[in-house]
Length: 306
Image (tube, rainbow, N blue to C red):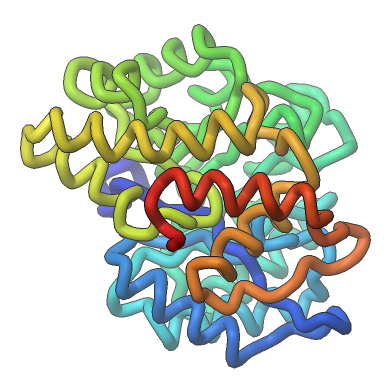
């Protein structure tokens, strides 16, 4: 497999998982949320990623989310399954569940917290790739894993048979560009910012889109990349500026939340937009009243609330 084995492009956000106030998975809300993502014409979604609170999901719940997403929107969107885990054996079980559900691929970070060596990272991915024949997107997220995958290591990972894409959420912009140049002809490359720099990269260097989080702006996110495809750079700039408001007001340069937690921010924003995103699950806490006002203020300035 390589980049030509898949058609992944544009905006594929990691989406929230709706829980009830008592912490139960809310299947009805999940189905409604999936319908909204499809109606907003997203290019795809990532199920059970960090925004989807994979760390508090049971194995059965993750598999249920995969199956429902494939059944509900798999004919309209690219659906990737988040398979993050502390061991290769766990990741393989999640990857097999994604494959059984009929998902288009999986997203996988190095084991979080462990801070593995380069050799351990290669072995981890190789073990998963050899066990499950499903397209794999390597996810570089130093904030969550404690390791930053440089261009040389990503190049080695891209040689694994099932690796077709990289999501690079490094705060090291120089490293981001070096990896883009090194990998653009081998795998799909995601993480392109929705600003002037991103426009230059997409039009002059390469890149395939953004695997962001939450999709709270709905169609604005994927339409940024549709505008680039159409050569309408002015429209792309307008749409990108709206996304940058959220990124600058809610998140820091390492993609961490400036207040509360990212999952609660996204869920509250979606709820304000009429999407039943539900509550966060412990150990995460809901936003305080003051934090909710910050989210509401941003959406109001963007013209999304009356």
